[in-house]
Image (tube, rainbow, N blue to C red; front, top):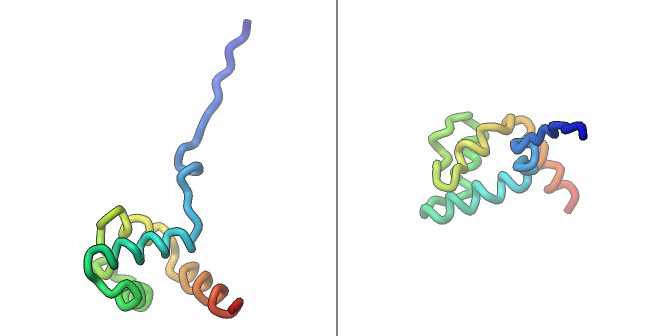
Length: 81
């Protein structure tokens, strides 16, 4: 009987959409008592990660997404409404 190895990439299984990341980051900021919108705008405009809390890995998650992609997602959602 031949044994085969199957590779599983956990990082792909844990990938979140840009929208999901934005929601998680917003919630983490609000939980810490920050104004989520103001903090996220500050981050997007400046690129300074200190605008985003590290609570619930929010800073790490948002830093993995290009800021241009964040703006694109926000504009797409805004213009759909």
